[in-house]
Image (cartoon, rainbow, N blue to C red; front, side, top):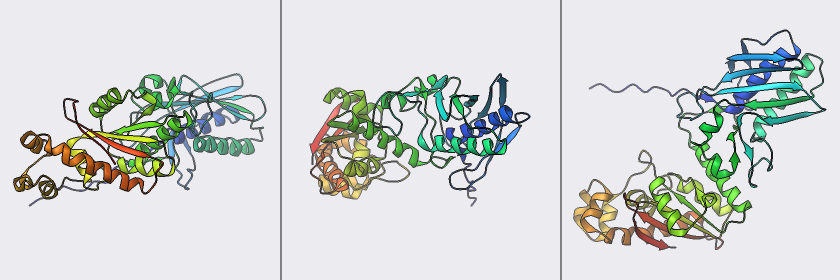
Length: 350
């Protein structure tokens, strides 16, 4: 019997790391002799990756360089994007400017003030450190306007959470470690957290997290919620609820299909098929139908037993969500179960 070889997935680099490398190359061209073909930077945890410089151009008092983002084996929508950074002699200090394809923050609650370029604090610090380092190397004053642009970034941003978070006009420059770890849950969960932060800053009393587009559309229409109230929860119900425990809103609705909501009802906090499974023996006990233990899917059970399934699952899912939230009375939780056609088939409150 042969076994499939286990291949380690290749990691990649965040937009913040790419922007830092592009800035280092641009400053070498501005203050030194020429833009190098490659640059090496130091990431927050001490790693020192090398980046190829994809392009460069210059003019009086400025130089621009670009680095093509490599997200490794992660399915990142910004993989292959060109991150361009222009360094220009400016007024005293270091300022950051959103160029073409980089967004502007328009809602409170994000780690960057409203009206600023959507360049997060860690990438700002990484680029500031590089600017100070090269200013010392070339005996220059670090008085710079740093403009970051991403050709096509506004179109790419439509595939991200940026529009819902109030980041208009393009992508964010992100990263806390500089490294993209393949299929990392951390980035998705961080986006859920930022969605909660923005909703709280806007004073929203009711938010909803759904497992997918079908349930999101049904829940949003049913409850008449704004786009800003809809959190891109996906499979990470535990990550959403644990953050709400410490950063509460008055009410949270969880929406999803019968299978994923059954897993929540059975205590799963990550609803992905690779990380949790429905226990059909338990479902059979809930329904008092022994044959359900041999079913393949919850949909199959629903097609046979009808409304008995959501009636058994919904209150247990709400109770399980309340367990994750803990004993807090600050958050009211309810669940909405949706079938594959987008019809609401069950609801319950904890």
